[in-house]
Length: 93
Image 1 (tube, helix red, strand yellow):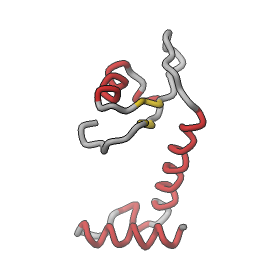
Image 2 (tube, one colour):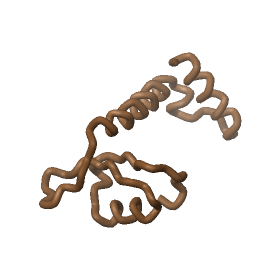
Image 3 (cartoon, rainbow, N blue to C red):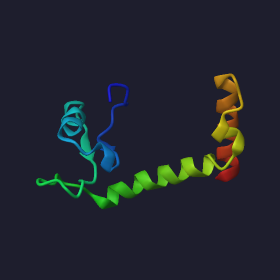
Image 4 (cartoon, one colour):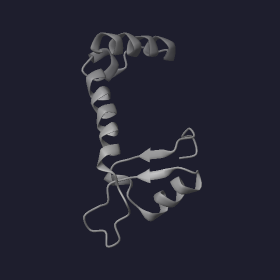
């Protein structure tokens, strides 16, 4: 959380639905948009419309992992790996 850039809304999945994480996000000045777990008594507000943006990002990472070189990280240096990710992103876009 400390390394997250300044943002207005933090999107996360149900695994991060806890009061402690909600407080951490609110301390940074962002609003948490996390779907509540089904066993929660008090359900914080949640916007499914905003949550769809997270799904688009997750699908993009899934498409990148279709490239074997990206999924297994054959490259030893970070620069070569970033180059391969950029090429795969360009091809898949």
